[in-house]
Image 1 (cartoon, rainbow, N blue to C red):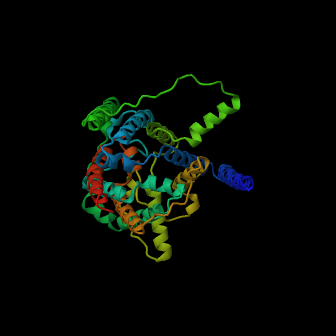
Image 2 (image 1 turned 45 degrees about the vertical axis):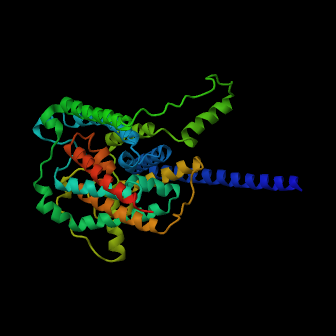
Image 3 (image 1 turned 180 degrees about the horizontal axis):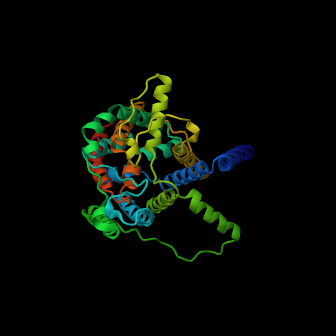
Amino acid sequence: MSTNVEAQETSAQGQILSGRVITRAAVVAAVLFFLAYLAVVNSTLAVMWLFGLAFGVILQRSRLCFASGFRDIFLMCDPSTMRALAVAIGVATIGFWLVMQMMVPEPSFGALPAAAHVIPIGLHLVVGGVAFGFGMVIAGGCVSGTMYRIGEGYVASWASLAGILAGLYLSTLTWNWWWTNHIKDMPVVFLPKWLGYGGAVALTLLALSGIVLLSYWWEYRSGPMPNFALGGTNEMPPMSLGAKLKQMYDLVFVKGWPIAVGAIALAVVNVFIYIYSRPLGVTGELSAWSDRIVSGLLRIQAPALLGVDGLAGCNLTLGAGSWWTSEGLFLDGGLIIGALVAALLANEFKVRVPPVKRRYVQSLIGGTFMGYGAGIAIGCTIGAFFSAIPSLGLNGWIFGLSLLPGAYLGVQVIKRIP
């Protein structure tokens, strides 16, 4: 009797495994087919789709979310993610420097490299940074973190995305006020104009090194961390070629990547996408989504946005034109699909429904704060921080520092949420 039960269980497990393999193969094949189709009809969109896929795979495999980088400093006294981000921004800074000096060899005349995320500094960055930092902690993830978690099957992340779109639309309604009364009169500080590329890069790397050292102090200020010695021997048994290939596959697609590996890989992607087109950024396209949804469902037209054509960053964008000709659509969509593919290959995809309904409300509120903050600050943690500091603009530092008090306030709130 027990033998029959075991056989049935083995058969059921085999069917489940076979179903998973077929699903993974079908999704990967569909993604590659779509890439090939885009390569034929529009090579630019194909490249952006490829960058988006890489974006999503990196975030999913390394669990890299900027919200944890700022939140964990206050919640768990763990600055390791922030330290990894600082190192990655340093890598991107060197890459951006090589790109920008070819565009503008002599920056002292005031010309800005094309597409560099250098924007006016001012109160809008502080307000936007605090709002965004608060929102990403409340929502449980930044904008890019929200999108890769959608690819993993997190249902609450859809509520976060809805909030982000709502916040971005609210920011389009107030943008002209911010522009007329503040942003248009604020200075643009491109550090190489005053320090030259060498001085600006050196100062940026020095500041990032200071963050790394400060993170170690923060981590060890309560005493040394436990040292867990690894037991066993370093000798490995002989391995067949098939086993070696399986080990390499598991290392990339099954086992989680160290956070620093993911951060540095994202920095490398950022450099290459800048060489091809522009630095990474996701919220400009999302603002177009929000406008298309509102105008399509409610027939409400947002006002024309003043000054955005003269800015370089994740500018607010109205949804004019076709969805299917936008580079940002394929970058942002590729992020979600890349995370889905990575989660499937690692057997980590699962539809995750929050155990309590208030989680949807929390995600929606946090996302709204994020969306509004990203709108008036002209970018999120990707565009206004991860791409702005390597662009050697002072604005990236102001936005990044403003995220800290917002994250601190968010931590105080979530500590009180049952």
